[in-house]
Amino acid sequence: MMTIMEFSNVIAIDGPSGSGKSTLAKRLAAELNLLYIDTGSMYRALALKASEESLSTVSPPEEELKKFLAKINLRYLGNLSDKLIEIDGVDFTAKIRGHQVSELASNFSKITMVRDFLTDVQRKLASEKIVVMEGRDIGTVVFPNAFCKIFLSASSEVRAKRRWLELNERGQNIDLDVVLKDIEQRDHKDINRDTAPLKKAIDAHEIDSSDKDQEQVLALIKEIVKKTATEKGIDFI
Image (cartoon, rainbow, N blue to C red; front, top):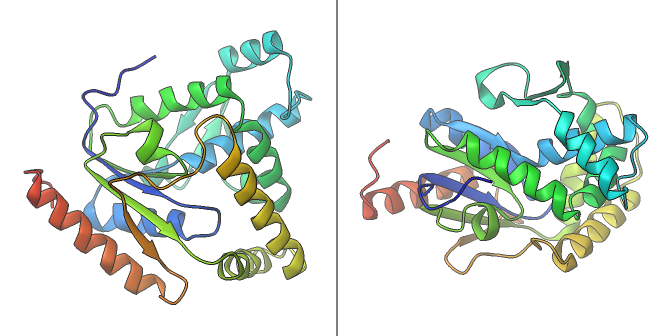
C-alpha cells in the first residue's frame, strides 16, 4: 500500500450522488490543465466487472475476491483520452453509466478490500502530479491532507431531477420517483457504512448547489482553489 504523507497536491471534491461533482471536477481539471480522477467510475467499473464474472458484489467469498482483484488490470485515463476507464483492455466508459450499475457500485464500495484496492490505485495516480479527484471520501480518507477540499451538496429532490434528466438524455426512461428513492437509499448507505462513510471533512469548503447553476458553482470552486493555493504557496495556476 502507498503512503499519503507526500500527497498534498490534490484538489478533493466530495459529495453525495447527483451533487454535480463529476461534471464540475472534470471542467475544473480541464480549465486548470490538471488530471481529472473520477473515483466513482472506478467503483462502477470494478463492480460491473465482478458482476459480469458472477462474483457477488454484496458479500463475495474472501478468497474469490482476492483472486479477482489480483488479476484485474484497471487502466484509468481520465481527461487524457476519449476513454475514461478500461479493465483488461475493455473500454468500460459507456457501460458503467447504466442505472443498474449504481446499486452494484454502492454495494461493492462498502467492502474494505475493494476500497483498499482502489485507494491504492488513486494514490498512485496522484503520486507525480497535481490532480482534481472527486468521490465520497477523498478529503477524509484517501487524501486527508489534500491542499484544497470542496464538499458539494444539494437537496435530494434537486439531485434526483439532475440524474433523471441525465438518464433520459441517454435514452433510459425511468420514473423520477424511482430515481429519487434510489438517491435517498444511496445516501443512507453511503452515510452509514462502516468503511469510509460519506461525510464533510472538517476543513472542507461546503457549497450547496440546490439554487445555483453549473457556471456559478464552478466560479465559486475556482475562487476557493486559487485562494487556497496562494495561501499554501502552491503555484500551478
